[in-house]
Amino acid sequence: MHVDEQWDMAIEETTFDGDGSYEIRADERTNTLYLSFSGALEEQQMKVAADETLAAAGELDSGFAIINDISTFRPPSPEAAKPIQDAQQQLKTMDVGDVVRVVGDDTSAVVQNAFQRRSRKAGYEGKTAATVQAAERQLGQ
Image 1 (cartoon, rainbow, N blue to C red):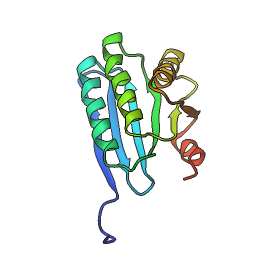
Image 2: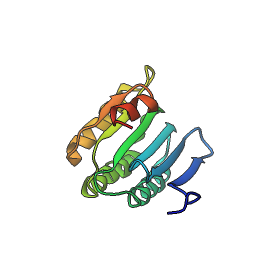
Image 3: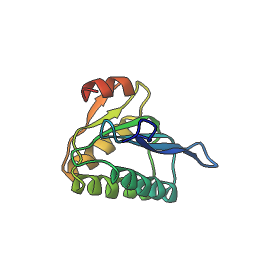
Image 4: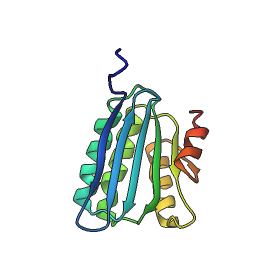
């Protein structure tokens, strides 16, 4: 591999007319999928984000880790939560390894509990960290 070859598959931050946005990045060097969700996303926006998440995860090797920053994400509607649940189940079938969610003091308990509940239902557990850097340390990066 040449030094100038890109190590990451990145999807630039995607913003919408409202206040919601997300960013997805697959780091092939560390075999980590980085996700960041902020504000509120509608059902169609979550479907697009879920599809992009699965595509990025497909670039990584079995046992890949996920760092999911939900520190400024607001609770989605039940309809918008469905693509999240579907993606979590797909990630499990893709052999996801460790998952660390970045949460802050202001992160909604509803968001935290919903992500944890859905991941358990999909068959894996998630840890939490206060920052992306703390999450990387938990993963030994």
